[in-house]
Amino acid sequence: MKRIVCLICILLLVFPAAAGAVPRPKNGVQKEYYPNGHPRLEVWFKNEKLVRKRAFYRNGQLMQDFVYKNGKPWVRKDFYENGRLKSLWTKKSGVTVYYHQDGTKTEFKNSFTTYRDLPQSLIFK
Image (cartoon, rainbow, N blue to C red; front, side, top):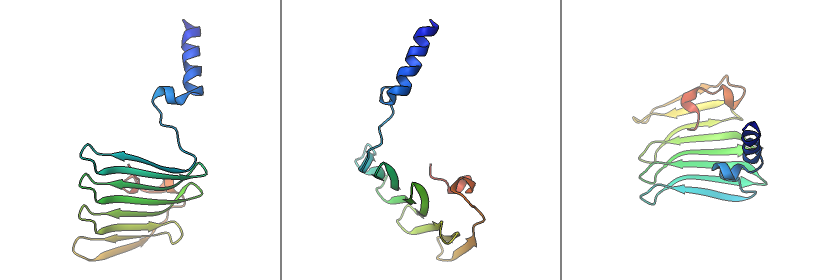
């Protein structure tokens, strides 16, 4: 019995697609759609590295747009469901700018040194 369990574990490690994992393309875009046909997620790869990720609301409007540099988050934009810009974060400047519904904006300098240090509310789900 232990041998069978070990064999299954080894097979799942060697062949992750058998466990339902979607293989990462070397280059190109992966797309997922809502049942209504609107895009749900678009993920771009170049040389097997993540370069961009975009998530959409059910109505087709852009919700989040991430740009990656060397496989790490570099720019993040969040949008309201009506398409207006909600927030902008850049790794280079270390500044997050929030655009409120009433048109005002709030800026603050991030003290985050890595993407892992970002508050959970700013992390792409």
